[in-house]
Amino acid sequence: MGIFLSAFRLSLFISLLRFFEMGCCHGRRAFVNSWPFII
Image 1 (cartoon, helix red, strand yellow):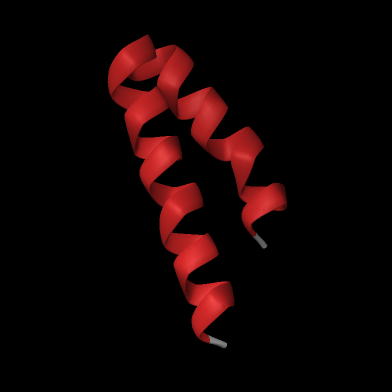
Image 2 (spheres, rainbow, N blue to C red; image 1 turned 135 degrees about the vertical axis):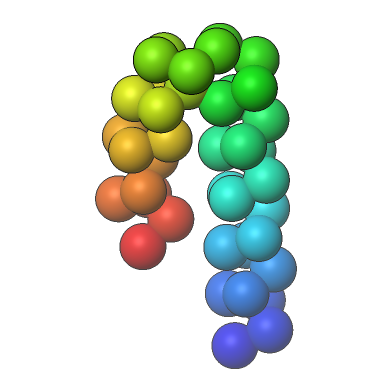
């Protein structure tokens, strides 16, 4: 459970990082596309 939670946090952090790097439109698309990999 703890490993899964830390992996989830890492994926979320990377998604947020990409969101801020790419800007609003592209970042939002990348964030939505990354959700299937997180779940």
